[in-house]
Length: 325
Image 1 (cartoon, rainbow, N blue to C red):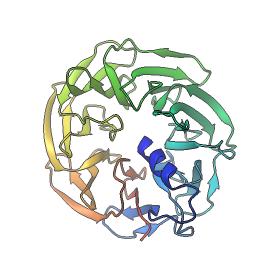
Image 2: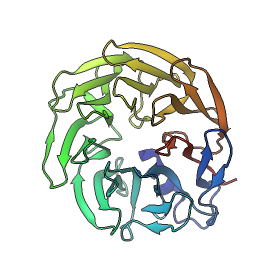
Image 3: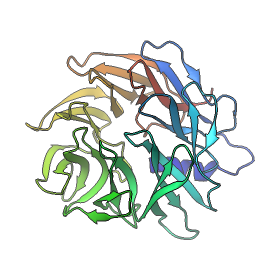
């Protein structure tokens, strides 16, 4: 999420900081809570993203880069070279093949109200740049890993953007969606994109991957240019999202019928679709999607709740950001 970049910008390079954030892992039973970045207590580490095979975690490092580490916290290494001055990475996401990592690169411009944005794709093995798309942010991979959808906007901090799709060879096009758009999410079946659509009111919308058949499927979306993204169920039939009132709502796409799962933000579906993990107050909680019943998994400390918790591929563990204590 882009809020990560703002947070890091305010803290990176300072001799001391009152904010310390770490990447943690915990079992869904609440056991085995471990700070994976405890070896650097001054670090700001956020936004864990789990590789498809579950062996590697990508995360945002306070030096402005994306870093990788083994799932047990060992073998930490930067992905790519040192960033330029006032450049900060945000929101890493793995390709479905596990070969590449895409992220938003924020370039801060002194004296300007808005930053500039681009999407960078790097080879996870070599760190080499595979592709870069200017005027783009919040990448989401197509299930085959051959395309990336994104928000296209040179002034994201002032207004919502439009939807674009690009291939790794550099070809890109804007989808014919006339509504403002933020936080796109590609469906697991590759057929559609969900996003927050802005017009007279802010809603959750769904559109075919080619830009046709736009539908509003739910109201009450957050009035925020940097919201937690909507989350598709693994079977691509439902979408969970955070409402403007800080609740998690699940909507069935075919019928547009929705129901609330209660307080909670930044929803994330378990791999088999039984559970949704959210942040609720100072806790990480999971809820049964069918019954709505849930339980607290662990506590979460610190000023950070926008990036959804990340599940291990088997659904036994959850990775999240919390303070280092």
